[in-house]
Length: 70
Image 1: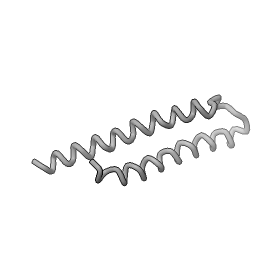
Image 2: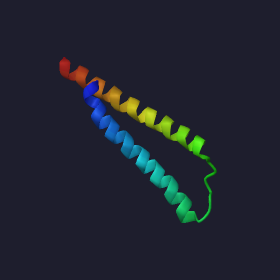
Image 3: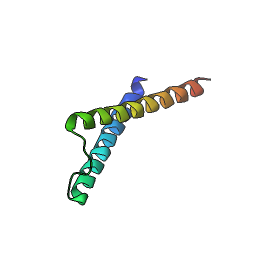
Image 4: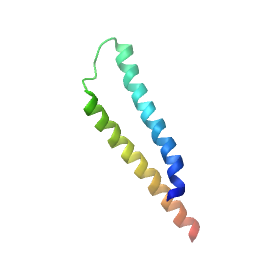
């Protein structure tokens, strides 16, 4: 499981950057704030998505390792 944490960290940072970039792009391109989220709500949203993403990667890595051990 520790072997997967490096790629998970990189993928997690990339996911955070992509979501934040999309959020900023929508606000910039529309010219006004169509997305009414304050910083706290946006942080919780990012943590929820990131948590699910990391859990899915670790679950997949664990399944691959079990399959290879057979």
